[in-house]
Length: 306
Image (cartoon, rainbow, N blue to C red; front, side):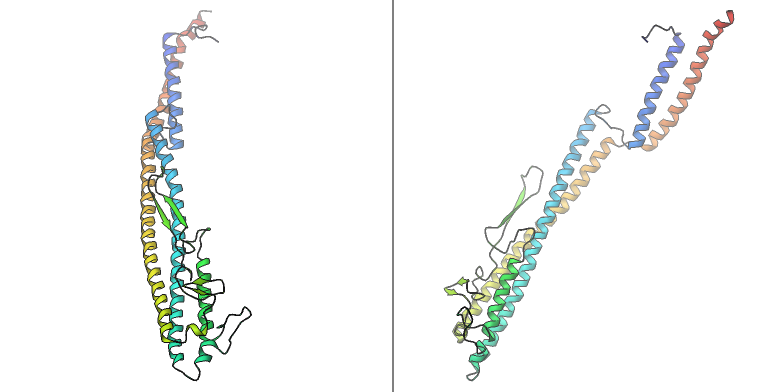
């Protein structure tokens, strides 16, 4: 029905408009109380709505980066654990060298101590028993430790060509790029460990002949000391990377909290104020209904004329 087809007195129309306005405000107040926000759509406050939306979007993006950093931290820790295990293995190799020094001074049993009386294996390589065999098996286990030090397919100990890039912001303008290295026997210039290994002119397992003189043992020990120094340097680099990643992870977590709080402050409603508004509007609605009823009594009095 078109407006104006039914005639209303000025007071009735004024009261009706007031009731409609109160109903709209009641709906708005109830929405704010139910959502906890005073800005629920762009209509409520365009500037605050889009600013809050921007903060929330960035916080979500940073949270994704935070997860990537967590994975990178675990990758670094996996490599660090591998380095510690390799260092322990090298210390065991040094122990064998020490035993070999004593063995070469035993003119009667030196051959048995070094080679264990076993001069050849199925592949034609000597030194599968005695101190020589122990040395080769430890080098083999060192290589196994390196190959098992991966995390989600990334192994910083397998090769110098392995890299991992970790972004620190949503625009990828700040990041860290970490590189791996060869922590195996070949990368550390440690001889032994298998017939496919080639290091410093030595192919395959070392033999008793490689450990039967002081000069040879000095050379082996020198290579082990150099390997330890290399691993300690790389471990220091990993520690620096881990510190950077951990610091960034903490920073991003704090930044996310700042963005979320900023977004909330732009849109959150004061529930105490909105609760008071609700009571006031309900009272106003009741009074408006009463006023409309009083206004209609004037027109109802016309019926008494009939």
